[in-house]
Length: 169
Image (cartoon, rainbow, N blue to C red; front, side, top):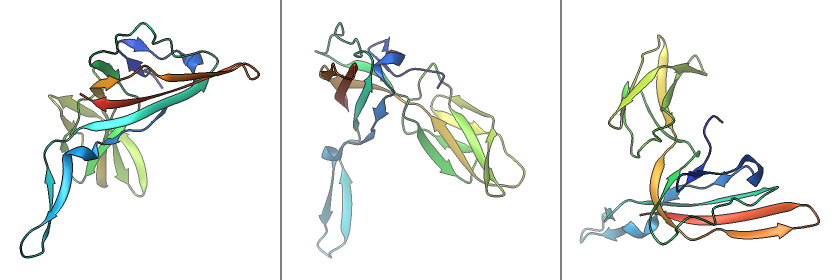
């Protein structure tokens, strides 16, 4: 991986462990209702993300100096993708500024890299002869609210474990 997970401008140290990252839609902004004719309709007031990050390594994450009282920038390494048969894709998230999105094309049952350029959240993929589908991959950046991570130390194994939960601000 060429870029590290970062929180509040601080990278996670390699020796703090390989992060396990979840990234999902925050369910609080959506719901379903039935109309008078019985049709089920999905309603959405807002769309935000939430998740967890955890790891186990030889040292703690060293985020003790961060100010957790307000939003922090989370530069995730958990990729998000969009796919289809076209060449232009609007990303439903902001990609990390230090890691450009990249693209793959499905040709004869195999995924091959293809150039793509992204401007203002819109990725344009270079066509590949014989391609039947394309995917744009990117690592997102979020403004998040998070509490300091829960940490533990196993002295017998010389291991430090930590977990934090985050919600998009």
